[in-house]
Image (tube, rainbow, N blue to C red; front, side, top):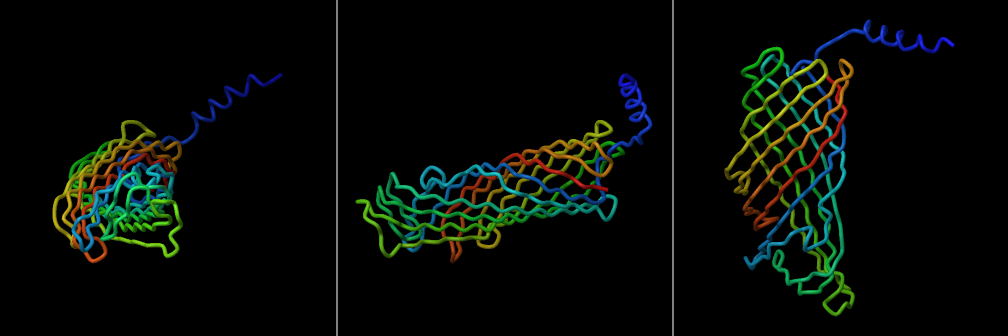
Length: 270
């Protein structure tokens, strides 16, 4: 039996393997993975009456606010202190239930116990720029400017009246909006060990943009592990909170939107 010699041989192989230390910043990276979302969305669509009801998409319409979706992101640092990044994800939900209160939405009235079918679609496009003003071989810190652009679409259709009788000609009601959410803040990266890297981003912005008067708060914290030089894994938690008054032809009202959740992914970097 020569099996006991396998362990010393394996340890010798590890000792002879090349050793590297991950740097706090990448020249280029691509990330793909999953986003376990937790959306908290409240909408008031006034319509021509100006008397819309503030509705919670989960509580009032039964739309699932937790989902597992795909997300893809990339970063590029063409110069030593200047980094750009992009990311995208998409989410959707649909449900049908009886309302437990009167709802006025976009000029249409839904009485208590009306059966409503709801469908919600969301696309999110994010871009950012970071100037890494300070740092050394282990950490980096700098100001960050970001913009995430949400494209939202909400459709309500009454399928049965308060007596449970089917509605032959469904009274459809649709609102959609482009919601820009800029932030100004900072970014931080730290490589405490050979294979580990910690990161954090935060920002805030309050302004009127594209018929939207919004307050935006953003925060993200994460950890990355690189067992190989160019490949690794990431885990982070992200939260964005948007309170917006919208005055546009497709949506006239108010939107309170919290986009948060855990992201797990694979990273290719150099």
